[in-house]
Image (cartoon, rainbow, N blue to C red):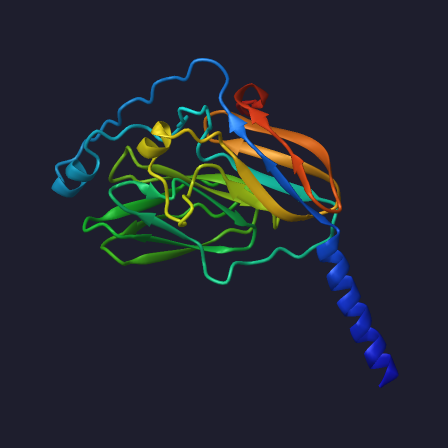
Length: 255
């Protein structure tokens, strides 16, 4: 009995210390220089639903706010702590809504199954361009149909639709429990439309909470700009600020 009490006490102590010795990473991702105009999407379809839904639509590849914040930058943290990747309680979802991928960028831990679905009354196609994972090319024939996409390796996976060539999105799988996406949701948890983000004063701010104390690498990824990273010492308590500028990013070398 005494041994059991000792083990329980040790487990409680370790749980408390793991929470105590953790800090928060905060920062911004901003664009330097003149912001390029977002090009209009070329919508080639006879489907009235898509014509109406995409009227005036612009590219989501690079969306910058009036405050110079950059939308849809994935921020993840690699730590030295040995932790199992935590799976979300429910499968993350990528929806084909309004003839666009929503969210435009989804970040998930490696090992998760993403539910790809459609809320549109027209047929869609999900074409994965994965290089390290399976690359399915399947049809979502009607509203409400789903496709379970299990991702086993870390990479940024581009999704397109062979039926509607202007549609694109990304699933970014990371080997981390600490990640977020800039400018993606408002305070109520609703997705922010790129047109609304562009008009906002957001500075590309982000917060990742309860990161284990110690040396860590903060990685920023963006579909257009490429990636950047910074090595830091996460404090045992409190916040540390890690900012990125567009000039920090480097595009991957072409193969």
